Length: 261
Image (cartoon, rainbow, N blue to C red):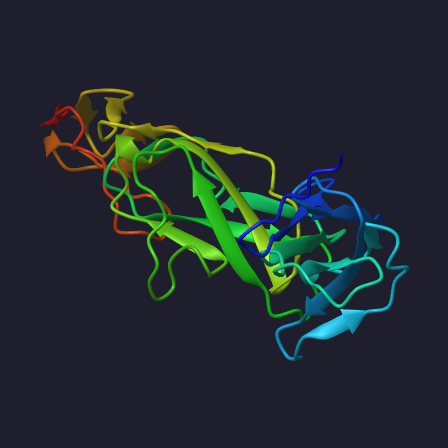
């Protein structure tokens, strides 16, 4: 005796993807199933941002679909030789990976960043051309990207300032050409912020000026800056970072005496 079981609800189709995005010049396979039951044929649908729902012409006996374009996809089961349909599956959004590579670069080519500086990291796209990119950012730092004018996550420049040790961490970016096309995530960019301002060192080649002579003073943070003086007094110096307003601490004091011949 065969016992028939009637379900009180209409089953829902399910879509599964073979990977998370379509690789460069590759394809991705979508699979449709209806609650692991047999006796179904399958209908596939797609939609792009500027188009309505469109049925995809496929072999209804096959439950898989190979795609090479990003978009929104979903499916529905049709009971073989009947007019009974399952519920449509949830929409599956698929990205296509572009061949362009993305890179995170520091605004200034500095090897060390100090607390209090205003700096920016920038997302650059190899072969980006005139594409109107939209950007996404990720970081392991305590300061997560915040949406706003000229800030992450949609702009190429991510301004950090004033920087603190909490900005230290790894940064990644990627760029999106449209809803369904994006680059891969960039390689990690490591940012380290030193907690204290640097203190320069001031040295003199002589502490005494004789006659009409002079002494040479050298102020050094990383790269030395020197100057001459013919006036006695107590001297100190400080460094300014490039064309920014960031200043170091004041240096040590150097006393110069003027001793007439």
